[in-house]
Image (cartoon, rainbow, N blue to C red; front, side, top):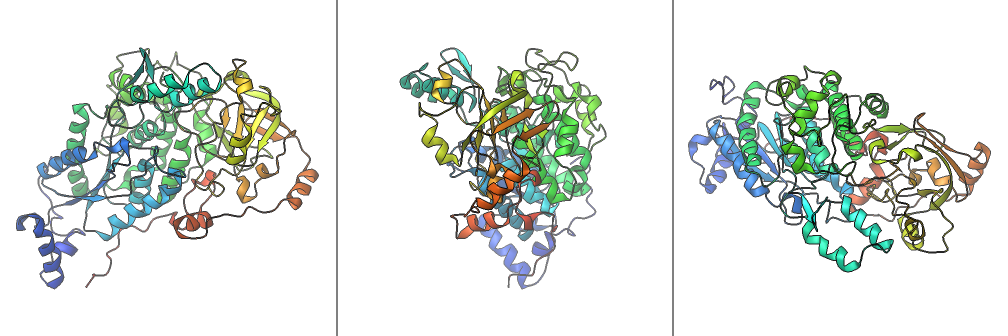
Length: 578
């Protein structure tokens, strides 16, 4: 601690468990002592909960036990008392039907743990795509002093001397197999070369994007986003975060003091500058909703229009997160875009965001480009509206084909993901590269959970022509590691009765990204006729969390949180258990 004085010692919420001289205090302390904790640690010092998402089913978090130990060292060193607790680990690569279905469940897990247990501050161990927003959503609803420690990206992948990225090359190689350009044997042999160490995806996918969002929001220490998972500096950052959370408790630096609208706007412009994942939109909407911060799709469009992409990373470019860190990482990017930032936004280390980055250096201009000579001119999120998606749909221009930004094409419609899989490889499918592929019933309700299936693979007969991109429209999401002219998050979704449900094969669709327009060339009268003839969506989920999710989830433009979780309840003291 920078200042060892602590006027609130013995007066915080944890003292309501461990500071009482009665049977309840006896019980709380006595049971904890069976772990070997001495009496002195119950003297009123800050108690720090460490939310650990370690799971062997979550390979992105395979090293989290070690990270947690380094956080504990920092807490002890600063005079706090660290206590680790498990949180549902939302594994992007292993969990079915989609990890997004369980993001809100994980947020409930961490929220109730924070509220019900005797902690004064929280360290969130995050990394894999949905763990970062889930834990931040839950912690935001409690509003204690909180700091994030991301697990870091894995080492660069290499296959036959070529850099290969998580997700990005899964899609690239699988399309090459379907086009007859890569053997299945070569495809299989690349598996081990793609993922060589612990850590999350090393592309600028959703995991790396959300780690960058955490840093740009100010809820982590500087450099959190890019240090490789197995680099010793990742453990140093964990240690220093453990030290810092104790000071945050003493300073009463709560999440609501950091996660202001200015902080969210800083994150939005940062997402454009790094060519970040479209998933950042839906996750930041949900986090802001827990805090009552008013941000919407129009803010994303407004702040993204003039923001170029500066970072040459897959899927928009050629490098990977390891290269990004060595080039200067996110601090170097934030310094470049300083004129776009709210420079006085407070961060977890007590300094403003500009104080943290004003002296940051870039060491490789092939990875991090200067603002005046950007990597790509359009890095922000484009929000498209029209009679097809009146509440908005989004597109990532930096990952799209410029020639397709204004295009009119014939719709080829797939009613759901099963229909797509059944027909896409059929040589008789009436489709060519000028068509627009439309996928329905893959939104929050329809999948359920809004799976990453929006970047539909192209039909083999188109791929064989050397065509690698077509316009694709859906109410689904896509992986942050994916690329292409993919219009996502269409709202309202088809399963909720949105106009997307009324599109039929053969309809003409106009896409005009510069004018933010997405229009179905079908008359209102015809659409009403189709609506009257269409049976409403029936969910097959009739029990448990999935039923609760389908019945209460908000639409994508609102962050796809459960409606009863929006807002926060703080950390009121609950009744004693005995």
